[in-house]
Amino acid sequence: MATHDIVLRGGLVFDGSGAEPREMDVTVDGGTISHLGKVSGKGREEIDARGQIVTPGFVDIHTHYDGQATWGSEISPSSLHGITSVVMGNCGVGFAPCRTQDHDRLIRLMEGVEDIPFPVLAEGLPWAWESFPDYLDFLGEREFDVDMAAQLPHAALRVFVMGDRGANREEATAAEIAEMARLAREAVMAGAIGFSTSRTLNHRTSDGQPTPTLTASEAELTGIAMGLAEAGRGVLQFVSDFNDPQKEAAMLRRIVEASGRPLSVSLAQADVAPDSWRMLLGAIEQAADDGLPMAAQVAPRPVGVLLGLELTLNIFSAHPVFREISDLPFAEKVSRLNQPVFRARLLADEPVTDNPFLKVMLRSFGKMFQLSDPVDYEPGPERTIEAIAARRGVSNEAAALDLMLENDGRGMLYLPFLNYSQGSLEPIRAMMESPVSLPGLSDGGAHVGMICDGSFTTTMLTHWGRDRTRGPRLPLEYLIHRQTQKTARWMGLNDRGLIAPGYRADLNVIDLTNLKLHLPQVQYDLPAGGRRLMQRASGYTATILAGQVTFRDGTPTGAKPGRLLRGAQAAPMRAMAAE
Image (cartoon, rainbow, N blue to C red):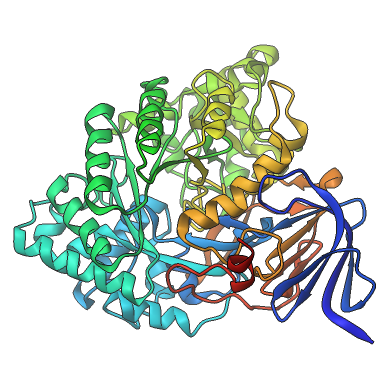
């Protein structure tokens, strides 16, 4: 007779604490981990984990599934990569609170900031809410293949309280700040896990307007943080250009000093100032040394735009000649690009755009690469489009066009625009090794036609833990700890991220030797037939959420035990007693 719900047999268990792995069995009963060690009893389901690794389910703290969670139950691509808990509502954008007259305004903001097309959101969003507690109540009735936690987005909050004045970035009055603080307190009391905001010019509406939160005052930000302080719960998440890193780091420190709430900020290397991240990281490390809860969210690979004929952008997007065919069906577009006369016209054309960033980006052939199988996110200089063109004796544009036309017109180019200024991931390694850094910034669910980074966890295991040749690797136990217990505890999800009796049975069985990240592909499964990039992996033997197997060999089982997480989650009583 079966004595356990599930038994994982003989795997090399990385428990999430950072300790060295041990070979053992793991039992699951009633949705929690019940025993570690040698198990003689049988499970209703037995999973042979011999020769494989067993990890806690991964916790991704930086996603944008705010819309997808309202119409879908499969939170992919994240759920395909061992992730069992996600935090959405980052970067100050989301869909609640929102009045009826502001629906389109928030859609345009999400369309511009996160590259999710207007028709997708207009058709997909049910808008069955106005307040943030209403939004949580709606999500609370839904089922998912991961657990979901939501943050209160500043842009939606600001527009809700200030209307057009908020959207136009006017300064908030004392009364408006007090109302935002009240609503922030209400949101976290209802189950929001935190509050997020954006201060970057990269975040714009689809019609080019900066995000409503760009120039919000320190008084406004502090006031909202004090709303969380009054509730005694919730984290703060910031993204900024950090044009004056010392000044902004000092402001963030003052906000944490005043509110006592944990604050994380996005940290990346920018080409315009490739060493400024060091100052910001140093300021956060000093704050942490002084006892302040501050952290830096960092990515395990470059943040890179994918360029292709089926995607939002390709290297000819700003060319008048290309615009002649840009609206044609895909197959016809590819056919025209293969015609010698049209090809010659296109290659002789020049980009026309008033967007200097776009013009430079689409001509950065010296740091643009072909994305090929096996996927390599730390390519060397010999693999640039510029180097390929030189070897072929053709122009950069001709080489890029030929590469995009591969695979029946679905070839992709990869342009790292953050974290690759010197063509190496050594700066990322330094960020990842900092005690104040957290793995994040995957943006799962966003940038659906340009970026596909919901697969960060697989890169973490394969590139950093197994394959890297252009520099030192990192210990698997360290990498897994960061993506499980460390991210979980930062968000207050103290019931998960550790393989120990009493903890949530969120688990992965991974064939690390054969773990492989596949090339991104385009699929048309969003509302209104919308397009999105999807990246899969092989090697995830099983993913378990709340004691139910949700994926076997990368294929969904149909189980949807995932639910909305309302705020922080307490550590198991057994664990607290043991401590």
